[in-house]
Image (cartoon, rainbow, N blue to C red; front, top):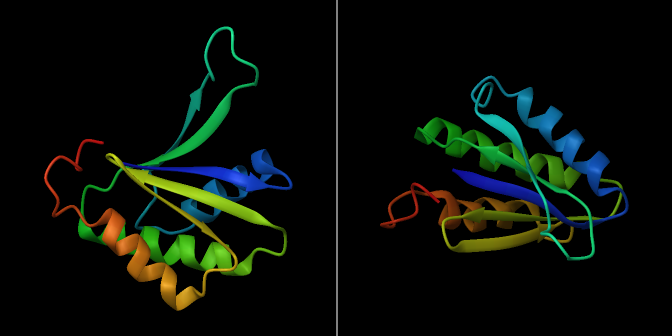
Amino acid sequence: MAYIEIADGDKPAEDLADLLDWLGRDKRLRGKVDVERRDVGEGKMGTLTDALVVALDDGGAVTALIASVGTWLAARRSRVRIKVRRGDRTVELDGRVKPDQIEPILRELLDDDRPGDKDG
C-alpha cells in the first residue's frame, strides 16, 4: 500500500479530490485507489485528514501511479505539495520538482524490493 496526502496547498480537500479523480482515469489504477479518513486525535486541534490509499499489488500499478502522480503535479496551476508514504518511508513532492526527477524519487519509494514495506 501507498498513502498520498496533501501536505500543503491552497485548497487541500479539492486537490485531494482532483488527484483521486485523476488517478481513477488510469485503467491500471481503477479499483486500487480509495480515500482513508483519519481523525487527528481526541483532544488535539484540527479536523479530519484524508489520504488516498493505493493498492500496489503489481508492477503495473506502481508504474501507473508514478506516471499519473508526476503528470498531475506538473499540471498543477496552484501551489500544492503532496506527501507519499510507503511503510516507514515518506517523500514530499511539489510542482518545483522537475518531471524527470519525480519518476526516480517515487520509484525508489514505491518499488517493493525492501523487506517490510509491502504491508505498510
